[in-house]
Amino acid sequence: MTKARHPVSIERALCRISGILDWPEMGRIVSRDARTVRAWSEPDRQIGPTLHHAILLDAAYRRAGGKGAPLHEAFGYLVEAACTDLYPTADELAQRAVRCIKEGGEANAAIVLASRPDATQEDRSVAAREVREAIEELSQTLPLLTQGAGPIGITGEGSRGAPS
Image 1 (cartoon, rainbow, N blue to C red):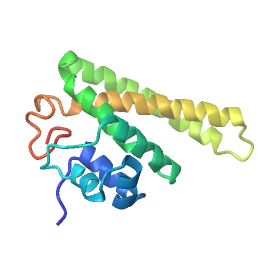
Image 2 (tube, one colour):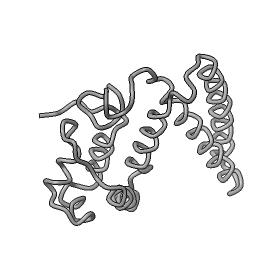
Image 3 (cartoon, one colour):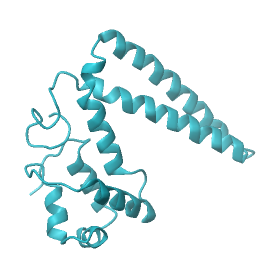
Image 4 (cartoon, rainbow, N blue to C red):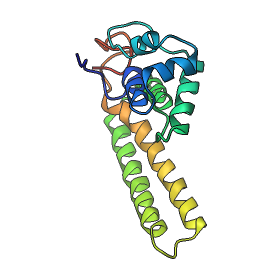
């Protein structure tokens, strides 16, 4: 049975990793039974990987060809979402939107330049930096959009992750 998982949660991150590495392999990586690791992906369970397990799984995911670091991304989002009370105004969201648009535009322009046949390694490095900056802005903005849902893990029904 497929269970609903918030798109940015520890459970969803584990499922993303399992798309590249199977559950038995994930268990081997963290020295746990595959059933235990799979149970970590269940939104109705109150257990999950340790930070050390998350690092091992994200690293193995990358080595196997996966893009990004699903658990790192989920943990980062959850920390930001837990701190939305630090910048709760509509003005803050508007300022974030401007920065996201600016950084996204700069990243897109740099990617176009880096995709040209005569692009240099410097062009690619600039594009990578601009993409990282855009991702950073977007990552800091996402929790603001879920603001008002309450503290993470308290009101997020059915998930240890982000608010429902």
